[in-house]
Image (cartoon, rainbow, N blue to C red; front, side, top):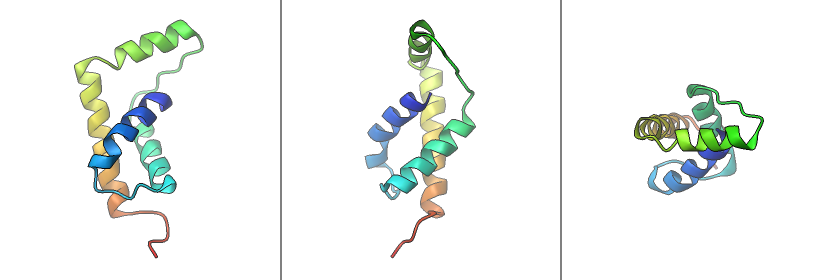
Length: 83
């Protein structure tokens, strides 16, 4: 899931009104990963199945919603120095 979240965040972050610094991106990733169901895999086949599962429309919508919610939260409460 980390890879999928990172890829989607890289695509969506330019559209979001949130600081693009590394600290904010990591905070967003952590919030998103904590809000989504875990998908642990130990084989390449398992990784492929998880990737295919993430192409389902409902899963894409859930991921987009989680990223948006995390961006709003981090954007309104950044944990880094704003100076």
